[in-house]
Image (tube, rainbow, N blue to C red):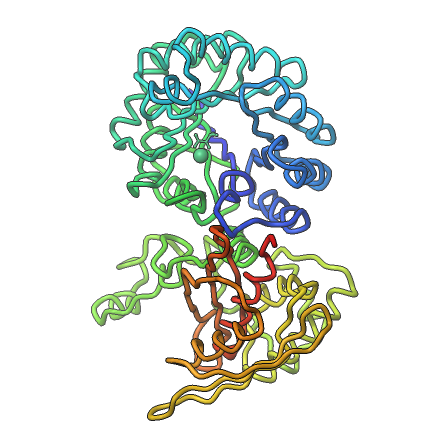
Length: 500
Ligand code: KIV
Ligand code: ZN
């Protein structure tokens, strides 16, 4: 059996479904180009029928990217497939990813149907997609909870109809690694054409029980030859399988003989880019890309690592692109140095935009001695707030031990000036109460997280907020060396997204 493993990245489709993480087309193109340099084989660029934005992103990514296959998701519905085929018209290599739920709960409650009819619909969708593209992937949604015997009949039917890849999603993240591996093995043994290479099986695992990576590896060890993954494991609920974990597992365990096209040295920059553009922090202890993934803090470990890194390190950080000697920019760095660092991080921009980012860079460099990659990525994404209807003009806060915090705030709303002051339990509470005196709406803060970008008391604080208004949750982001300002900016970011 061929041991080449294909990486199918769905950061821009399944990953982007995370509430609050939506990217615009320009940002998606940036991520797609980064994925291309990372060496992924397939980029799932969107679900074209779902929105004009998704349709347009598939078109633009198809134009921007050369080597990877561009894939568009559909339901097993002709209209979806028509729209996906249209969106893929500029792709050099293209794939339609169509499918339907195959588990009993899906068949009964979602489709009010029966097993035979689902097979008919699956076959019809694959045959219809084949009219537009040669490369058709079929997904059996909730395959993780689909009985193996019936699943084998579905897979056989779609392979006979021309599917080149069959995706076996553990949609709910339910399976145990052994169970998922046995499912793949069962299909490999019971579906004609799979072992002969007429079609390959793909894993698509969700992390609801923290087993997405283990299930994916088990799937590959039992014969799957494509893995569906996202950068940083992002995705709805607990997320999808993370690309970096799967890539590094096969690199560390070379004896398994699994080969791929992934350039692991691009892993770290890809992780930073996705985290920064989606405003989605990476947990510090996240395998491979977390801030602490290579930080040895216990005395015994430090002693061992100093004697020989192999004592406690199974991965050389350079292999994932972590560069300890990366040039740190300061207030004396010129535009060219900033431009170079941005391009190393995978960000290309026009001269006009670079001038704006450079001006912001100088302001930040005045406040912070050293500017790190995360700061630069934050600055590169900071233009989102410039078109805001409501803008923070100034904020002054008095707080400390033994004093009741007081804040005064100045806002510009559609160019008109407003100001207010309030006291509160703490400086953020006071500032938000002052803000609410100007913007009088029934809104409630539901989530509030503050994270320092790198380290040091002069660091930039990133704030994520969720505000509920009119029964809808809105996600906002702010970044500033002053965390009170960052918090108010995040709150204002939410309000600017209100639908009415
Ligand atoms: O998790 C899932 O089942 C999916 C399919 C649409 C492929 O994302
Ligand atoms: Zn999924």
